[in-house]
Length: 236
Image 1 (cartoon, helix red, strand yellow):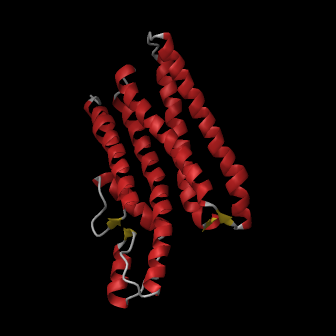
Image 2 (tube, helix red, strand yellow; image 1 turned 45 degrees about the horizontal axis):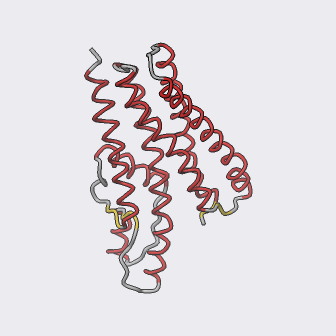
Image 3 (cartoon, one colour; image 1 turned 30 degrees about the horizontal axis):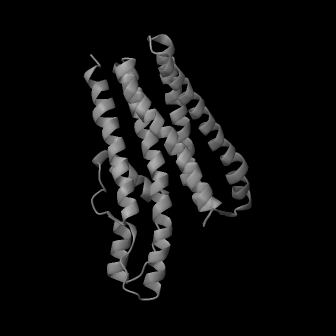
């Protein structure tokens, strides 16, 4: 388990991602209201169903944050991984809905130019903040396992994200005391968003983190190649 205070920077990143996502959703609703398109009744029902589902997931996220996480933060108590995983899953579901909706809006609503550029940049920030949480969530417990193995002098492959600082510490001092902070995870996530891979000097060890980065890279491809590229091409 992680303490609620230790998880605070990453939960705040999730909250910021959700709030940015709500702003994107509002902008998409404005596009929809200003450009009415004749669609089949079942498509209209699906559209409003998604809107209701998005609103309920947003309310559930905020409710968990206020009535489950915040009391633990005030007491500086332990925060279960189940609660953190649920917060992350709700935020990520909303993010994926926005990612799909914005790509669909390009086709159905003709969103382009500066409006699309702004929404694409907001989506880029939202994706980065969401994956910042997930990299920390999966790396933190693996790091504790690796530290225990190092302390017991067992030869075991270190799992998680290998940062340059801990590689240098291991080579020069033969210890595993360095712990990455929020700025380290933010640096890793932001450069991964830009490069579609782990930044130079960093390594990913473990199938969960590799799968996570595959999803991250695919999301950023949709943002950069589909959304931002179209926005720039239509600026004129």
